[in-house]
Length: 362
Ligand SMILES: NC(=O)c1ccc[n+]([C@@H]2O[C@H](COP(=O)([O-])OP(=O)(O)OC[C@H]3O[C@@H](n4cnc5c(N)ncnc54)[C@H](O)[C@@H]3O)[C@@H](O)[C@H]2O)c1
Ligand SMILES: [Zn+2]
Image (tube, rainbow, N blue to C red; front, top):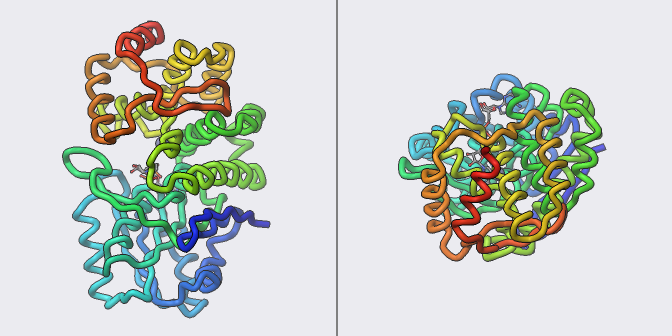
């Protein structure tokens, strides 16, 4: 039995279906949601052969005419080059406003396809079919779409909510384990910002047991989506509260950038960023040190890095300041009082940032 989580945004509301075996029922689900025109399926090359045919067949059988395009795997595909390829394919096929785009893959293909859908003919509907854990619990939900520029990540984009999200959890079994672990960092984050019961669940299973258990996968994806949906419903355009989704991300983004994109997976950098944010929280909010130790043990158990990298503090500080400047208004850290209870926009003096870093690396 699949679960459904609804993102309640008035006219832009949509369901997230989560469960096993959902790929083969995509066609009828699209029809249910009023998506009856033609579909352009945008597939990551890492999944096109494995899952593409099932998706195609299901759409075909439901009477939806399908075209597809394969996008090279990797962050460098969140680019103008791939965006233009999608526009070209859509134009060549004569896709109209009644058509829709469908993203099959991880966050790269989801963000890229979402942005193409936001802009093609001034906006057409799109369906997210996430195949990585990070995409299932994070990037496919919430409507942030975009591409990168040589100057930085996600600098061009739009808010464009999907019409439907379908997370077929057994797809995670073909994912490299390192990518699965990286996605779990975001699940740990949801535990910290809203529901420590997620930590209890993750503490009790090994990665192998978790991957083999459809019910458990459904539980953690569902709970993560519910938490993200709740935050997005209250602050769709990141006016304030949505910032809590960035727990651990201020330093995490800086690590990704200073180490050079591609060195660290996003979730790996967030693992270190969360430990740092917990240490800052001890200093500033009285977060219990025993809970930081618990967090570190959990991340280690999930095969995420917990040792601070040998990177220059000056470089990291510079990257954090630039990141904050770009998000005008959202200055400040997300800090925790307790697991499940965080505050955003917390100012932390530079000396405290440096002191906690030094204490943690040494
Ligand atoms: N829009 C948002 O709110 C949001 C939130 C977080 C992250 N993001 C973005 O998400 C992107 C990262 O997404 P990601 O971590 O999913 O990476 P990704 O899309 O690059 O996928 C990771 C790798 O896994 C492969 N893959 C995907 N599914 C697979 C499967 N089931 N089996 C085997 N291989 C599979 C892909 O080919 C790729 O090599 C970044 O660009 C980031 O900026 C967006
Ligand atoms: Zn993240």
